[in-house]
Length: 277
Ligand code: CAA
Image (cartoon, rainbow, N blue to C red; front, side):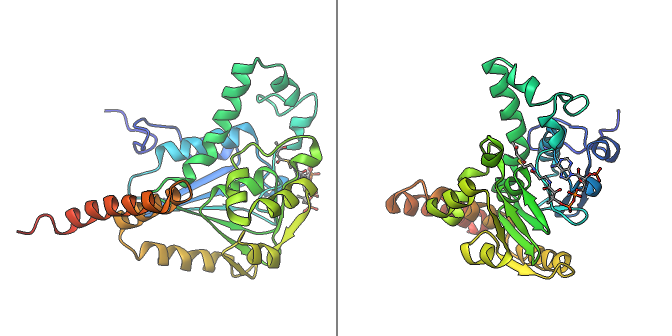
């Protein structure tokens, strides 16, 4: 039997997440037991992202081994990510991936499909079975900010600079970032942050709920390691069920949420004690 390049993922098919294929697009991916680490690894270009980055992220999501509970997303070098590769704005574009000019010429259905595929690179980071943690230092601009927002938690270095640059460039944030931003900081602050494209630094990020914790640049890796250990200290299935409850809370009435709690707890108690007579 041929050896698979990656374990079977939750999507039920095998994706190419070999180190070589990911390195070509500036990504690194390591799995160590229950922890997966994704590294944006184009520090010389401040981890600028392309369509290939997003399809690489989606492939990682599809092939994530079942045992993984915590996914750390980090960036190599001085910046977490300077956002979309600015070559997209040029007529030449990114070799093999086109430009905004070529995207503009797509029909409506193809455009829709292209952006939806890009968004798949971000959406899986919210799955209930995992907790995703962004380790953010330096600039997190545009797509970089949105990637940090796609994660459940953000631990940031004291030099962090979040910026939703898209409106300044004539675009909207479309890589899944608008909803988590509003949920985290509220509509008024999200409006301010996006429509001014201003920089949000560490103190403010902590104060308004964009960051869970601010540490020194040198302390970032240790802080993420500590948080990962804390997250792994709870029961795996109870953590997934609790995340499902928390994620659904905003869309439910109190009564509906109470019913959802009862349903999840019934499953937990049956799983834990149902075998005993
Ligand atoms: N795309 C491609 N290359 C980039 C890049 C980007 N987004 N950001 C930086 N680089 C490259 C630079 O061109 C430079 O390359 P060379 O060494 O080959 O000249 C290298 O990275 C280092 O850049 P700087 O010297 O500028 O590094 P810095 O540390 O002084 O500044 C920075 C860092 C503030 C992030 C600055 O590079 C910058 O402002 N970058 C552009 C940010 C930006 O506007 N991003 C687009 C956001 S919008 C978006 O993501 C979503 C969307 O449009 C849909």
